[in-house]
Image (cartoon, rainbow over all chains, first blue to last red; front, top):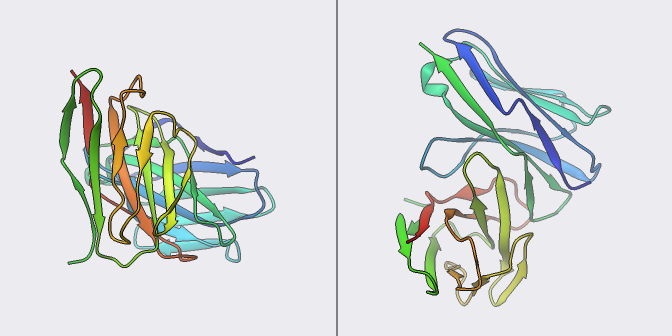
Length: 112
Length: 112
């Protein structure tokens, strides 16, 4: 129940296309859902995050869609660029909890 | 310039040796974490600490030890009991009951 499932494992998108990564969870106590971006050899950095009281959050080209009833959330990258090529992790954290549960990651490659 | 500093960036260990990875933060964060990342995989929690002089085991604590003598520092020792220590190690921190986890740039440990 503590797992966060993530798909696809890898994704190849043409420049200018839309990249979509999906995550699903079981634990209804999760109340904070961040997405992290990681470049090779670097630590993950927060990209965008959402709480379950909203269904969508947009920051620039990045949008999180959240479906509380289905216990799913997704990351959309609009107008994908080669510089977006990285590994993306979704995560979740319980109410007032300290620990994050991470998905296994999606390796995104944006072709020029 | 606030952040988390991990050192060294690369570390080589001989069979049977203990090695210590450093993690220092100047963000005044209460909680600190150690994660292990293997190629193509997500982040697995090794140990975490919510306050000074207190820490808890994560999912894969066997063969590792930590200390939290100061709020700013959370070193990780990889002992000889850890049979497969080659991995990328990430340190992170958060404010108590806050949201974002900040990550260091990682230490790549290789057994030679």
